[in-house]
Amino acid sequence: MTEKQQTPSAAKRWTMRGLAVSALAVPMVAVLGGTASAAELTPIAEYLDETIAATSASLVEALGVLLGVS
Image (cartoon, rainbow, N blue to C red; front, top):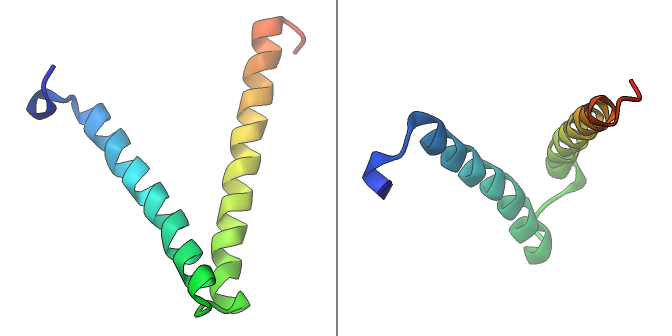
């Protein structure tokens, strides 16, 4: 399948990856450049924390099902 023949789900995944990279890169540049304040970074950190916690919970649940312990 060529780049132009991607399925909508593949295109959506690439869009989400781009947004995730941007969401991480922009604050990192701001921190390294010394222009970001804690007030600007707190919402981003909270979102990442919630996302990682949800992903972790999903993985634990899936592994439990696969291993037959839940």
